[in-house]
Length: 226
Image (cartoon, rainbow, N blue to C red):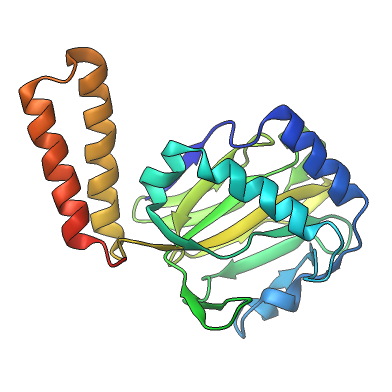
């Protein structure tokens, strides 16, 4: 399931994030690449000891916490602290790869990456190229969103960022362990939740809507691992 989410960050939050990124010192993007990805990854990334990284992560995680569409799409059990990357100049692309299944946690242990997400921080007109291309069952999808918007997609998808040929592309990316491991089950729950939302808006809390809401929660209760 691939969905886009509008207005994840407020204009004030976006301005703060971009200001702090502008004042940050960057490192090579290979610091979080696995054995396969490191061969095709050529970008810049904020290192773990970057001065502004904790504050940037708080802003993004706070925005996700208040976003109901993100919750129903990802059904997050745990979110790995978000990362920030930059594409420009000679560090300008990330070739085809699949995100690693297990990601190490700062406090120790591992998170299973079920869902990946990219939060765009640059406007499309600020750079050329830099298209996030994601392969799914319907073919290849090209994603280039406005600043403050997000795309959510299965971590198992083959994807890439095409070369940036002009300007600078800033983004935040993250990995989520879902309460519902199976992507097909997550998709069914998402579709049911969206349909229930439209039914409530058009019909109100009538008896069939209440019954179907119960089916949704009982399925979630049955499939959820946490």
